[in-house]
Image (tube, rainbow, N blue to C red; front, side):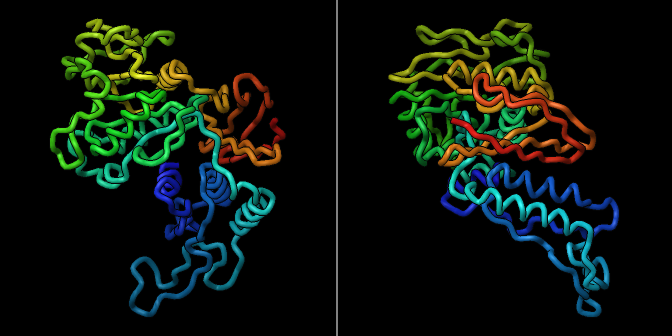
Length: 370
């Protein structure tokens, strides 16, 4: 999803040019079910084009092989011309793409926008004060949202932002242009979730607090000490949160949303700003518990996020696509080694049904939605 949304936001075709057709290792194998789940998951999360690597095996030039004399790769067509049983996965994927050609013309449905700058995503080993913003987006924010009913879409902060969907603004170093765009977005009527700190540096490490100043210079300070949990309004104790900052003095008319369970320090609040509003949350995490997903739902719905798809089994991920003529496709992803069951609603309360998913199965459910 990060790859597809990033390519799309940068104006490039969301495509995968080395989608696996096999594996150079005999064990553990990539099985037919694995390949089909991989192909359908990429389509569910935004891929518009794929290239299979490799489609057919063959011999290496004598003396050049590093893993084998025959570069077979357990490919869909083996080096000797035999058709592998994994060919069935490619056929099933081909059937899907033909029957859902309309998905090429539309985008995945999403409740919220996750703002980013390509610089910070591409420089994971050197991201200034961001303290691993790329990993936080991937392993914290997006993972939690995939376990929630608020489906995410990554959007370039300096690109075209949708004022009708909350914007998540992560990281501590952010270009002046991105900070100004985020400030304009909020002050002109948008809503945003800012975490785990206010950006205070430009991407080159120089001091830059455009967003912080535009929102009235709230008194946010580094958090001191450790606590096992934060108490989130409407959720209760949420564990696994690494505190980065807290609010020393609340802005005028701000409402507290979360406190440190031990010290009582304010970790999160919601506040009006210009024509819009924002939630500040002074922590980050790696997704590991469902209360973290419920926390995200609570904070984002406070900002007006509309539910997209609710799976009552949060380990069954979902993606919803809507066409121009009322057609829709719901994709349910069980990417684990055991069977799973879920009950699914679309939107606020449209019940779709009960579903059983085999291990490593992506179920395609075609719908008609008004």
